[in-house]
Image (cartoon, rainbow, N blue to C red; front, side, top):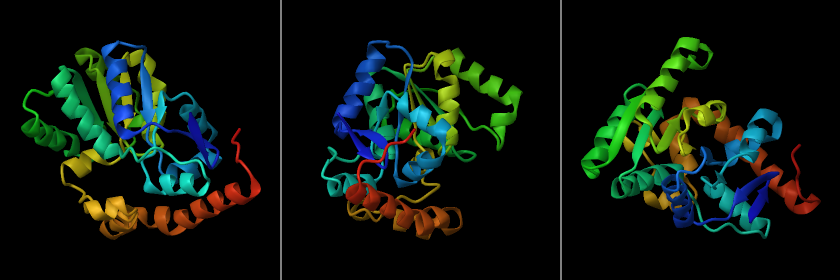
Length: 253
């Protein structure tokens, strides 16, 4: 069952259920699929981006990354089954990939972030098979040679799980355009998770994550990059949810 939040349908699976579905799909060598991890900013972008909406509709899993989605679901009287934070999903999937002898590939992040994340995760999980990392240059999506290089690198090592940290909606655009030809069982968009794991970007204290104040911490840490998302976006998201609660279900074309 999925829950409608701002016209976007979110899966009600718990964190552990999401992990199980991903790992089971990989082990069964199912057809290529992808996972999206929406937060409030995604919900707002989906209101005006038909391409983004189409990508969401075709996703294997749509899991609630932001605490604001949990609050909204409760307010709308259709509660979700807990948060599925993208960075936690990334780290836990890697831990289980070591146990199950699955191969993973890291694409994206700021220069050096994916490689540093690889070093940190392999220190924690010595037998984890990280078969490649790649940090594409700015504007890579319009450079045919770079796109071909990325494809060839991934196909050469045949990962079981591909983690893509290019930011939304760029990472979703790229995944959707390439997941079938790549043949990777599961691709996951994880935003800034490489930076968070590598400590290039400081992660909010656990108490702020649990109380829904992670956005405030990130705004303090990266104000120039994130002020518009939170100062302007948060009130817009609240208004969207209020309209849904008091004026009926929102449906996106």
